[in-house]
Image (cartoon, rainbow, N blue to C red; front, side, top):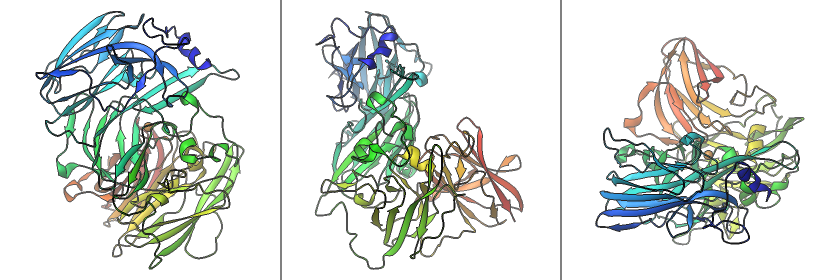
Length: 632
Ligand SMILES: [Cu+2]
């Protein structure tokens, strides 16, 4: 019962007369995947009757821990998280009645307005006093993904994450006849509060959910090789989510902000592996699973997907080496929150471990994860890369792995050897490879053969053939909040045979999170160092900057290149390893927001000798790292 004390302490009456079911608990809230539209559509008019009550929410599945939460439901039906979905063909008039059955909370509902919003029209929210019912009418003429949301605490969207945090529902407007068969609507939500603990200080807990549930209880999607998969991502949480798909690129068909939604023409659809979905933002994406096996789609902001306890409680800090959480299944126990699993079934006889048996022309590398010193609050680790036998010494001044440079279409074997005292696994971020080698221990592969965690003193051989030249990432996919700052990430660069990697003009800028003990809290490492090592450039020569954000908690990083008090120009070349179409390779002032799990390639040609500098800033503009660029 302890977990209900905070809501009671807020004065929220958690049981309604109509809602009581059994043993003092309020009615059970249904979580759902937006597969059924609410209301009744007749004669071009959709009528929806919403009610608002308190129920019991089970974000960890039917038998898991539960929390009392405010929720919407249709009148006469169970409460739902997310709220009932409004889905209509374009040109539909919508009549929504909203009953507020909360005994003592005034409900303020936003987003029940026409799309497009008529010029000069009010988008003011609807206020519904306790016990009252209000009716709103609007038209949905603009196809796209939108949402409605409500607060009972008078909060703005960006502060709404308490007991009213799940009062959100999708609004989808379809082009007539274009409802994609495989389309899924995913509503992201957050709930956070502070609870008293039996011993010690109050603890903040935070729960991130997709369609009302947290991993591993999110819906497991089943697809088949070759399916067209279309997802609508609707972020009704107050935080930014860098959403990353393993193993495949996806196209971004459109983006919106809840009020408007832009569908891009075909040539303007970004091809990415990571999409930054801001608070209140929507993205419509399409991808085709080309290889069978198990694949993850998850937020790359570690506090949004790392392991947590029931209802988002923080887990006790881990001790050096002995990592109890990973004795079981890493994928199920080592992650939570905004994570979705996709199981892709083969169409023919292809296997999830693919055709990687041939050794003809295969390059062999060894990647060692090794101890690299320690401080009282934890160890450092280092990756070292070896083409031959022999190991060399660990350079403890660099807190990231060396760039791994591979050739496009050249088969490679990378044996990851774990010399650290804790389990690990390596994910090849952005590489299109077979599922078994993707690096999500306990999930990658297929039910026939799941990819193992790499135990201390053990090794794992990853085999793949990178099909695309570009800038990628390799990083640990185990206990990321600790192992990444300990040193376990690096740049993965794939080049064409006729365009080899040249250290003089290829400039990787790997941005990682330091261990707090080494630098100030407001700093990031550039290529594993703080302060960054200066880089030499040549005037009149084109340099390829390969920018990578693989921090654990900086989703709004901004990278800029300055000469004196002006931004220099750069030319966009690629995003997430995929070349941009020619008409998108535009020259612009050198400033770009790069979220976690994204890579960007930019071409910089310094005009004259002198001093330039690459600056990394927070979303708010605070300078957190500088790389001096010396032009000769
Ligand atoms: Cu997130």
